[in-house]
Length: 161
Image (cartoon, rainbow, N blue to C red; front, side, top):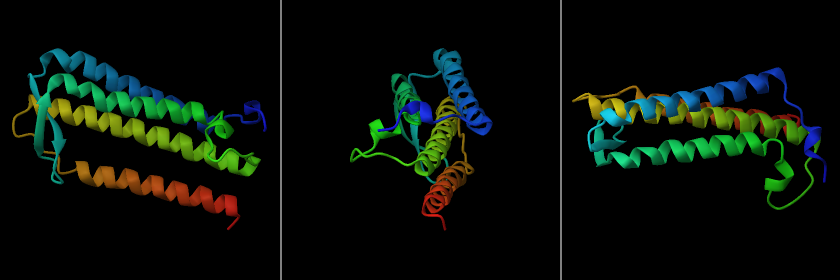
């Protein structure tokens, strides 16, 4: 197996990591600052039009950002240790490592964007009565579409198409 030192981050990679970490810090900071002003029952789920349709205790607001933050950070650290997380275990070529690195960093960034959106949405809909976000579903669909495009681009790059 090759060493994790074979992978080096480009300037774009470092920018993606910095933006991802910044979004996570902003999300957590906003959540920590606003937590005390939240009502005991908050909106935790929304329909396709961005209207709250499920509520829960405000303590549950920590789960979504925790999971998304852990996943984002795991993707970033996974870029350096790709062979350790590959199933089945195998040696990965340099072209595939480079493509995997980009896909994982974009995944981390998109998860951080989702974390920011979810935290903002849950907090604002709990504070502002009749809060609606008709723009939420198109943004989420757009994020997923961008990521699918990134996956296809880098997978086709591996196949040299």
